Image (cartoon, rainbow, N blue to C red; front, side, top):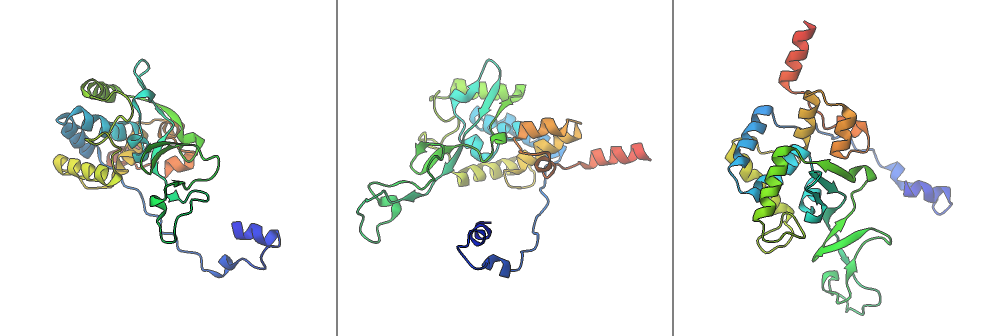
Length: 254
């Protein structure tokens, strides 16, 4: 797109991207857990500490994205309305040298005394820890207020009551720092082992929520708002009709 604009403005003679063959569509269907697997995961979580249970119920029952979950703050949990304000997510922003920093050649950006986040002017973000920052979601549709179902609300309250730090991040490591994505993934796979279900990526929990809501006859527009998708088409990419729902539909037709 940038090269097309450059051609239009007379800055270049041709768009070299047009000389490249278009890559083949490599889209793969997203998978979701079955109802039996969801029940196994919920049973396993019921035996875990409130911190672990509440974190993964947030993903399974509310469909919160990984970066949104790891960046959740207590001040954005509304206990009266039993809602979560999903308006920030945690992302690692690379560093760049500060203006006129005077660093010698070869000094890494991260070691620059005047280093600063490598973000565009006006990019909305707040510092969290080291190179991790709170940033806004990619689209305004992703900024949403998500209700907490009763089981999630109960787990969140138990986590809050047993937590030493009742401000800042809802979920953090033993030193109060943001949870690393790799550690979060590893915890999910341990949960899958304990529950005896397939080891799919943590994002499958979000796919599963959308699929089950579809099976229950929830309006795609309602699902879109819960999931924070920009369009119904985005929501449909996550939807999976279970075998039970498909069988019931075919039996009705027959």
